[in-house]
Amino acid sequence: MNIGLGHALRGLAFLIKTQRNARLHLMTTVLVITLGLCLQIERSEWALILLATALVWCAETFNTAVERLADRVTMERDPLIKQAKDLAAGAVVCACVGASSVGIIILGPALWSRLGG
Image (cartoon, rainbow, N blue to C red; front, side, top):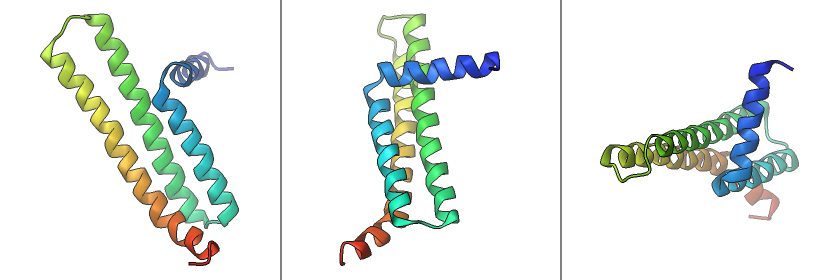
């Protein structure tokens, strides 16, 4: 295995092991993929779902990296570090809102019609 890939996989394992929100993203990812398979969504819809999912995972990973690095710099209260952490967390919220919107637009109508709506 490529050494860089090994580091990346350890990072993702650390993310899932230590971050409650990452575990929530994992459960949501499994749910969305399962729904997409059950609803037999189109190839272009898969592309959007997977892109939105990847965006959330990237945002969560960067957020955790910012938090870890900031905590290494200082554990004292620092307004700039707080702002950096808040901004990184805000990026996760933006990614989640976008991904949720994509999911609702793509999966919502197909799920609704399957449920007899």
